[in-house]
Length: 178
Image (cartoon, rainbow, N blue to C red):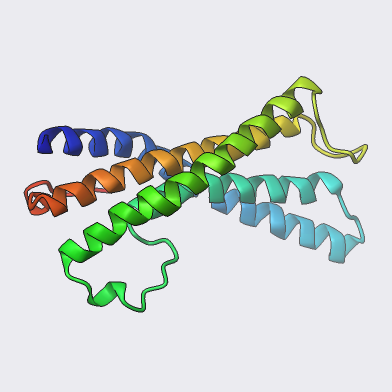
């Protein structure tokens, strides 16, 4: 049982880690697009809708692609009033039940909505409402679905790790390296 839980967590990590690393590499591109947009707008009085939309799309890609990666490495936002003082067993119990009762229903709900949004957008060939805007808006809407699907998978991996800790085997299974 423990080997199965650990195997599930490692398999999911093999998906979310490369996706997180790859989308993190988009951040310098986003910074360059923002700098270019600011220079063109305030230096030359030239505002480009394409650059504004590209900023939004790149930002969305980074956030959605890195959510699961951040959750895996426990660097996500957490209200840490009590959690920091909990024992490893209590942290595991909170992680497991929090994932089961809070995270998974949220991820399933947003994922369901995102899939519907994506399929509708794809069916109408949605693009930007602005004449010079970016085409194929359904691509970024698919990224919304994919990001939450990855977060859901990582939630399963974290719940597997919590179960290992609750079973007393957590330290026997080292975390996957970054």
